[in-house]
Image (cartoon, rainbow, N blue to C red):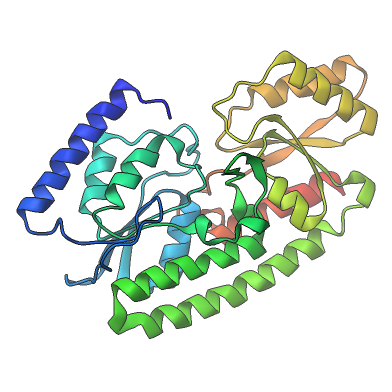
Length: 323
């Protein structure tokens, strides 16, 4: 993990915040750390709503759906924000240190925040929701490394509801039945959404089910809904795309007669535009089929600002461009 001067300043702020918490008699609150270590379970003893902090929009949406009116969820990363590159600001560290409970995606999605989250996990309930998924269901990309973009298989993301429900029930036992009921309702909703995705993507002719995007975020989607997935950048946007990668993809698109490629809301369009120009130079016209939500959801208050709305937007964009 690369450590910048910025991180050292953030870590210093975190240390000061933890010291302050200790002086207030709250530092002995235990939780489930980022590394999975278990401590004496913390119990909520404040006034409702519970103050929860979530990293991404997808995780915040989960927490809101299960927690209901019992919790207030602060989301650190807004629309258009790339979690692979996101660094915790001193303000973020302050918000995290004041949280009653923290939810994040995990599997190294929030790579630059990992040390901060691990430290906080020793002090309070800190839950990596995607790490509740069985490892044999994940796509391995290296030794002990897995593709973190699990939310694009709705049936997998449905399993992360368990982590939210369990954490809230343990932290706030008097209201565990409320969390269970909301979790059950949301599981049923996501079961229907998964079948809807399979049905809609199935309407695209099999030979046209090729999804080309800016970075490698959609392999779970491809596996779940039967699409071939290609991307310019790798799983993390920290790695720059090379000329060879673009040229190889231009050759693939031209040879397969792919109709459309897609930009992403949290990734620069520059590489996709280079792809379109490269195909045109080879005599193959490929259009930009639309903008997909990948590592961030849409603006709050819009349909795309919810997990289900984001998924539906992506599916409809793909169907419209590739049918």
